[in-house]
Length: 280
Image (cartoon, rainbow, N blue to C red; front, side, top):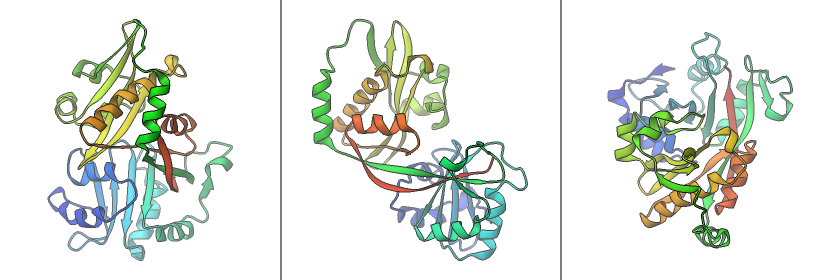
């Protein structure tokens, strides 16, 4: 398991394009839209790949039978050498990786629901990742029911500008998905709901590739549960429709707020896959 030089990232492109689960975050790294890491079994002719996005999402794909790579990856995943100070949330493709990982981590794997002590180190926590499919007809019907245009004078929704980008706080914000404010403003898009002159909720493009735009959403904690995220997301999805982008949504099944919000917006669960939280 070795770090691939950025000049050789093209070696990961063709295998990555064959991955059929949500992989936009990995594409952002391999296509060098953001900085990240690509680990491989060997630099000359790599066939097993591990891509890490700076936000902490990762994708393992390619050949599953590289024993030397797998054993080194086991140490990496368990953070044996303490090279990380945060989690990584990993998906694997194809699904034949699941049996390999189950064997590799058989003494360390624990389901999220069983991790009652909230252990963070020395384990691999097993969660579920949901890939959604956008249903335009359902979205259109839900949007009409909301009578979205009847917002009170306390609300307004504006395009997310550079100042909002720089000042936003939270765990899912554009800062973690774009190089800087200028990059986001020129190559991304976001909409922020202003309530009583306070930016309280922002829906933004976390990734844009080809005709796909993956949504990110953040609402200030004290303003959650009031439907603000729903309104901001509606504007961003309208932008997608007008500009021929397919809206993309993915989240942990255990993230009940995001899971419910997706369905309110017309997204339907399409695929559920193992989602591995690697040791801190």
